[in-house]
Image 1 (cartoon, helix red, strand yellow):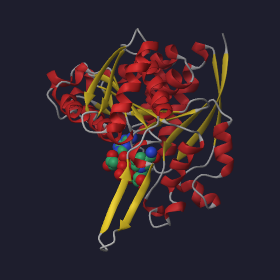
Image 2 (cartoon, protein in one colour):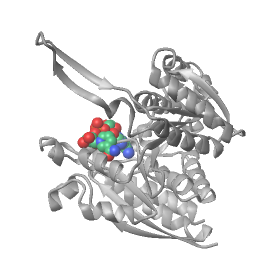
Image 3 (spheres, protein in one colour):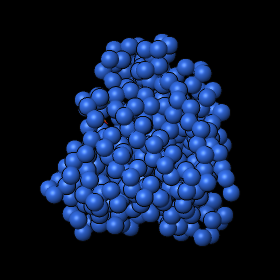
Length: 361
Ligand code: NAD
């Protein structure tokens, strides 16, 4: 069956346009093999949008995103825009995009590629074979709960307040994304909370347990967040899919990412209940190497694979891209950030050409 997908392309700033060009070429290259057609529409977001039209997320860009099947985002930001007032910063555009598209679920895979095992700071026997996914709630919890602020007491002493709050419906919707994600993987879901201390976590645990009745094929377990952090560095192979709230997910997803040791290899997905998801590398716009053909485009390419798997339900095409990335590494090709003895260092563009050559064989 043939499918046509409208993809909004937000190349952004810094290395963004360089890595996005590679990802778009790779998607175009695999499309015919899987009977897919991609209609790519570039749009402005971040610093480039500020320069062109004065705001980081133009209304037109949000509309284009809403009217597409998926959004590919490279990276935004840079020192040039750091002194602008907060509402005009590139990062504000990112937050506005997430809320505009209702993206409440953030999926961050951490997979150890055998070819890059030396890049991790952990022992090879601990990380060999690690392949896990952190599903983080993105729009609730302590980052958004009310009341929040710094308040003066009667004595004049200031008191900082944030509120960790989750409603049943907020827990259920992230829970369902997590169970569905685990279903597409090894069917093991670990829910992380602090139910021994926090009431909000007890509700979280109760809802996850109740939801599990609808997913009898997925094995659900629970861990307290302190233990989860310990287990992640002690024996990460025990995890398949992890689901957790905004604050715990922020911390655990970074820790999980660093198991792999290579920021240029990490994709992510942000999903809503309906409508397009946003697929982007974990790293930023790397202004220090922008325009020098040094960027590693593989996290961006793997974000394209995540788009196919989790946004467009085209797992075979996603597999093809992921296999090509592994083959390229097997052949000893690396970008400068992954330089190691006996490897061949390629520029961003040349890495893209090597991938295309492989995919078009
Ligand atoms: P960064 O991820 O851009 O860079 C950190 C380091 O990693 C740098 O040395 C950089 O050269 C390197 N690096 C990152 N991606 C790489 C790649 N693909 N290939 C090779 N090397 C790579 O983080 P930063 O320096 O803290 O932030 C730079 C800018 O990016 C800031 O303006 C920040 O706000 C923004 N940022 C944007 C996003 C996003 O768009 N989602 C995320 C994080 C940071």
